[in-house]
Length: 439
Ligand code: ASP
Image (cartoon, protein in one colour):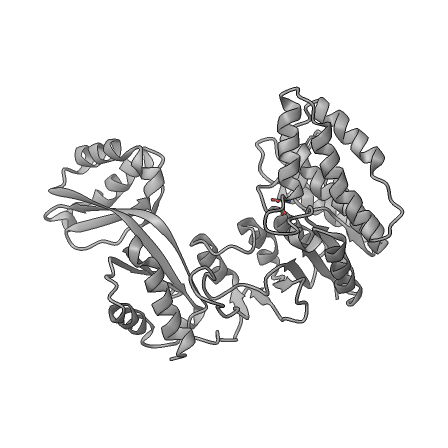
């Protein structure tokens, strides 16, 4: 049994947190490959080391003195080292970093030092081998991740390694210049390492006991999802549920390696298992609810639209020509509605409308702003009758007007459009009907 374990910033923010992580790793000998993030926040108003590095580098880039800022970063690490009782010094490392900052090595290099240094400490603390990610994780010239080369080099490098620490978040271009993934990218590194070593499980340790059925800012203490499929996760993440970096799914999904989201502060909690497929039905017909506000619907009407070939394509082309991606396109016989992000649309509104007019000569176009979209996601819906009926009865009961309904052919989700003002009420009503009263 081989596990890759990734620990997020809050799990490694202090010596005390490091000790919890050490206990977790030592309690299971299959936890062989460790991917650490940079130290995160120790308390709410604290600053993540990654952010401190970005700030420090911005000052260095302006040619100003950055010694004090760098010293503060070093203090974060020294506090961890002394708290763990290690005889390790990062003096030399910080000298190199200072020189590199002066030489304007780039903000990616700067940010990557958060994980790099934490990896050195972690390897020292555990007695594991340290592998610099810049030597095993690669990016192509165009900045995209080079999955093939990475898998080959990393796989080979780890082939005969019993236990290792591979810092998260960064890799390098072919020429050795460091590049990071987008923020939260250590999740992606964990997934890449899991693939390269053909792990049985990728454990992603964070500060929550898994994915929640709904947003805790809307629902008081929502239930944890026990098992979720990759497809469901994608739907929920797309609609705003965040725990895991979106790109972390792809490397392991193809390999059939499950991800287990676990809580460093409550290691006994089972967390959430993310799997390719499962015969386990979710506890409550639905797996989760997520949503986003800030959409606009553009409703286009034209008599006999149904028989006009290419009408839909011309409408969508008007959006494409202005670089606007569409979210949903519900349609009627002589109507077609396009849902887009309000922020994206606002600045280009009149140009898009003019183009729709020019390309399709509609009878009317009507715009409705300030809409929220809610996704009710669940593999259990396919085998359960009456799911939609329950959702809409619940919404009617709390007086929420439904503006749009979209159920994909996969029967994995139902998307509901409501006024922004009804957004929270609608989510609460749906949560209650499925989870609280457990119909
Ligand atoms: N430290 C990086 C960040 O704050 C990457 C990570 O934690 O995954 O975004």
